[in-house]
Length: 136
Image 1 (tube, rainbow, N blue to C red):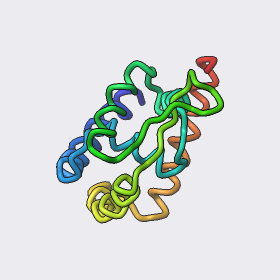
Image 2 (image 1 turned 45 degrees about the vertical axis):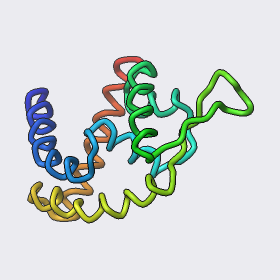
Image 3 (image 1 turned 60 degrees about the horizontal axis):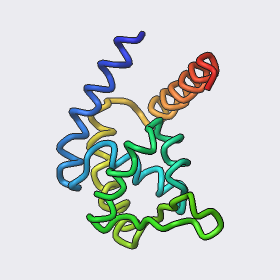
């Protein structure tokens, strides 16, 4: 199963690569933006935990996204040690552009909407169980 997950991730990345090139984003930048679409105004720590990345990895990526005009980083007014990340209007509008390409990746998967939903649920359950077993 380990190789199946690994190789599927690589294949999925190959399908996503041309889509992300059109958006001008890397895959880690894209999933960061998705995380902010789901819940805007998060701390760097919160984003890092959700994306399984170290804050030291997130910081340069967020700087690039800020330079691109998609996010804004500001010190948390209640906790000066924390930095909050919010989407700009351009970051919110990127969602519409990204959803135009969503059909390309969905079609490439060759799954019905129901199969896709069931698979996604199974993958989330698998990840949750593995994290519990690892003590996270």
